[in-house]
Image (cartoon, rainbow, N blue to C red; front, side, top):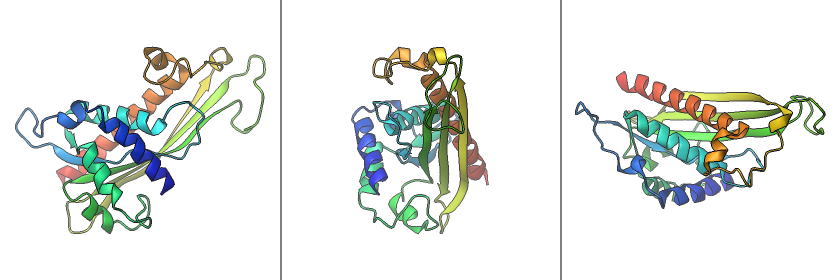
Length: 219
């Protein structure tokens, strides 16, 4: 529950700066109602040493990406935080017990859980403790666990459960970037190896989420 609590704190910060994600229309341009989805803040178990909240970064980026497509209406972050505040420690998002989710997110058709499992910058895939050597690339390993639950029936149902992995080779020339200076939120971050890798992961995760929610909704 510690990681969930940290993620909730990050999500509360996001909630203080509402944008189009929470104010978007409930209806598409053709008049059809958008799919109502609760996006739980990303759980960060990566032990990354970057000087900002990766939970906040990925939750914000994925929220914006999903909302921009115009097919889903994301629940108000305040409502999600409030709903999660009352859950018991035994109610784990990636366990086999799904019943609590239907009660907790009763106003939504689907709920999304995401967990950043790995965010590891290193010098060799099989050498976790190593010094950068001349002309050697370093590597950024990313992995995020996805889970989408369909809440429309009498019993919640898993429609997507997947681990997305994204590995990147970074030339030594770009291995020593100061991310306290080029941090998330600054335009310069978007053009760093880590920023580009995060954008790619966000795009892939958002696409998977949207595809599976759309398929489940059509059935």
